[in-house]
Length: 329
Image 1 (cartoon, rainbow, N blue to C red):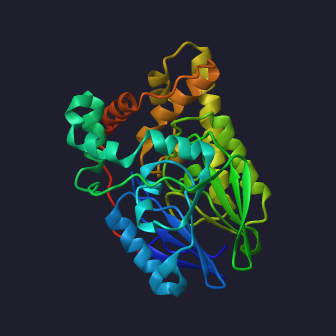
Image 2 (cartoon, rainbow, N blue to C red):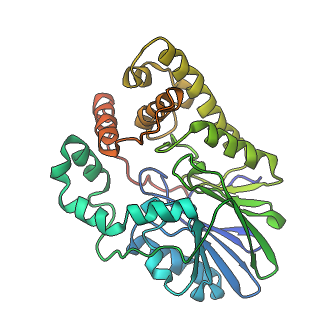
């Protein structure tokens, strides 16, 4: 695959496939995709707020006139940076995995608005969470807009003459992660199964499912891979994420068996091979998820506790909250 510049905005991937990228791919700066053919369009994910989603839709409409009336939206998972702009597609066919739809119903954008206003009620974790998003995204005016259709394992769609295959690979990053595969164009939109150039974060796990999802992508005849965060990649990017989780799993297991706490293990594991990846504090969430997997603990992560732990690591390392980097030409 030819090297592509990682710049903000629209990227024409060729043959009716497009991506909208948001450097630096850190907290909240997600990507979306568009598939177009025969006057029909399918959008892969919306963005964190209405402002960013409107800009993204405007970019697609400039390149693809048919995107003025997008017919189908696929949400790859429930996180707000992939769903909160859904209301701007009102009237479209909206599709997600059943697990994604259930999670969306439990984490409505109106609750995010309330949390931003009342972050002090959530202690250290609330302060850390608020700092990541305050002044970066505008959560006002968001309205819960759920999928109109759900599926359980797989679903095949048509966009003009193009076949688009949806495959549920969660729980991994979240409960209902979905891959959007366009076989004829050797293209896949992965949602947050891939973070390229940044540490992934496994809120749900098991991480073994995430590794299996990477193996599934590697088994497909694909060349162009659009991650949920970071630059467009090829199979080398998939292998890097798979290697990350395999390494972390092996290292965490050693420390679990030695009786080390998950927080101590996360700080003890040497991550030098991934030192150039952003958001390194996420290791602590991933190790905690692995520890739950090792012990067959079915409880979910305490999100605010995890944000407090990550904030302590950022402070200890002198790492500021990240925003978009200066874009490359």
